[in-house]
Structure formats: C-alpha cells, structure tokens
Length: 113
Length: 114
Image 1: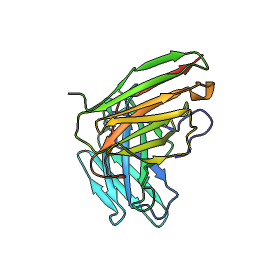
Image 2: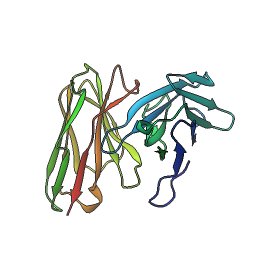
Image 3: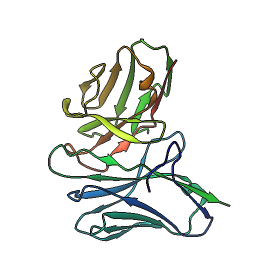
Image 4: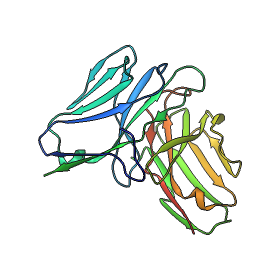
C-alpha cells in the first residue's frame, strides 16, 4: 500500500488469522524482491525473497506471491501471532546499473490478542 | 553476537554541529550501506561501499562523508547539521558484491537536531 500523509497504512488482524500485506512496485525490470520486517526500535529484518522468474515462494508460515503482469507483490502470514506485529516493507532490486535496493513505503501490521 | 552494530543509538545535538555515527559488522561481508529513514518510515539508500570503495552515492549533500577504514567498518560523518537531517540512520551489510542480498541491518541511530 501507499502511505498517506504521516500515517502508514495499517492492517489489523486477530491472533490466529491469516494476514495478507500488499505491495505495488514500479520498476518492471526489477530482478529480485524482498520482504523485510521492522519492529519498533530495530532495523529491518529479512523475511523472505523471490526472484522475478518465480511467482510464488514459501517459507515458514510466510508465502510471497509475485504478479509481474500487474507489478504486485504480496506477503501472506499464516496463523498470525502477536510477535508478528511490526512494519513490513517490500523492496526491489535490479541487477543492472547501480543495483541499489529500493524500498516501498511500508505497512503496519497490528495483531490483536 | 551482534552482526551489524551502530553507535550511538541516540544522538541529540544542535544545528550546525558536526557528528559521527559508527558502524561495524562481524559477518565478513564485503559490502556495507547507509540508509536514512524519515518520519514517514520511508527508507532510502545514501551510500554503499564494497571492499572500502564507494559504489553508490545517492545524491547526498557533501556534508555527509562516509569513511571505510576497512571492510568491516563504515562510519558516517555529518558536518554542519541541519534540521532536515533529523531521521533514523541505518547501517547494513551484505555478502558478495554491490547489490548482493539479503542485507543485514543494524538497529539504527536516531539523530535529533535541536
């Protein structure tokens, strides 16, 4: 999602539910995509990645889906837990040129007990 | 067993002062980065170094001068601090060359300019 003003888009879910966090990216030439989790007072932490030649990748309780046609990335978290509460960022990189990681604007996930 | 460590964690100072933020990584990575995160949580790359060589300088004012004494350290010196420099600064490192992933981030330095 896109941030509006000073507020991050927020997704509020109940503990135990599944969460889906969405991200729209702009560079159709991006080669690689990453989801990061940032807890309060901490730096971003790698969760899962996916290459542009894939459309789905699964990790432990997390799944990333990539739709290159509409330039959309999603992160699915199964059985969301209170410890999943954080800000989630998608990031993209293109492996030509300057090869710098470009971050999206972030989504805050709040897990209600 | 901290992987990427930054000091200080908080830095409060007056406009016009000069300050430094230190970063060290013990992961044996070849590439290190500095990012700036603004009040809207937007993260943007400032610099990257590969084996002590500057690779990316993302149109950052020349008041910001990174220094890499060895590949495990990338320090950030800021001259003549301005109000707009208030942000959280993150250091990161990654294995391999420029652009290799994933990047490992420190816990940030919150810089507040009075």
